[in-house]
Image (tube, rainbow, N blue to C red):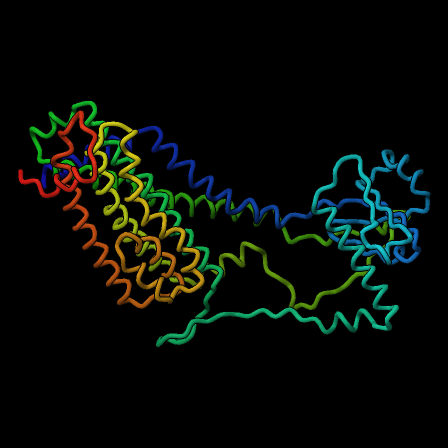
Length: 443
């Protein structure tokens, strides 16, 4: 055990002291916080309005256009050709020509601009024209638009989970997002740190350093120390990421809350000469929405965060130990990168399959497929983490972890049998048949 600890200590310190480890540990939380908060920051800011000139040949649109948060419309009376010549001096972003045939041919609308208009602006203009055409047709049919709008409803619901402790708030969106995020992080981490183990074994083998090491320690001790050392590196990095991400996100959230106040009501261009005024519609107080950040935090707070974090660490460790043992076996069996692929592919199939199946498990987290894949050691680290935010019985989690640890014991034994022979095997390209012989080889 002392020898394994010495190897573990060496593997841990060598990797933790690398500049790449320090840089990634500091930069990753900053990037995650930015990815999380920057979209919310822009969503809370006022939108720059685009000014649109409108030539209406029907005479039915110019006084009924409604300004929006993104677009401000100005009716003009000049001919189309003259408006196009003067457009460069107008200071407007686009010129819209509504021909007299628009009611019979809605696709005859034309938009002019000095540069290509964005898809959002184009769609906003089209939507405004569509709305007016609908209004005109409804009026011609004797239908009041206000009466029709009053029949529309927007149904939303609050979700609750029921248990022996009573009912409590729940959020399907937060459960989906957190579950998929945890599964993705475990998927990426297993590949990153598992490959580190494999590369470390290959490097020691090709440099013949292992021949000196093996003279002092047993192959299994070397493999166990290397796997455990890299695992601790991964855990250290994850814990630092969680703490730094939380700290940076809290500081940035506080800053955003102070620098960006409530969204200002967009001032319509009716105050300017020649611009039509949009009708002001007062929204009921019940429709007032909280900020995006508040909504996100409220949704996340409905989840059992301590359970999710605890299970994440356990499944990360278990999944890593299983796959890193197999990666170590592959590293000991080959001499070059060209030989790695034939052994890597079968090992990673369960891992890739579980990540692909995660999107289907999210749709039915209590289904038979989800249950059995969360019990198989090679797929449970990802599938179970997808299910846990939705609520999983305690006995299923315990059984899954027991099977996961049992899977590690089996793969560690298999990997050790291959490792003890392959680590000293040079100049021979191994096959699957050869690996089977190594497993049953008696030293």
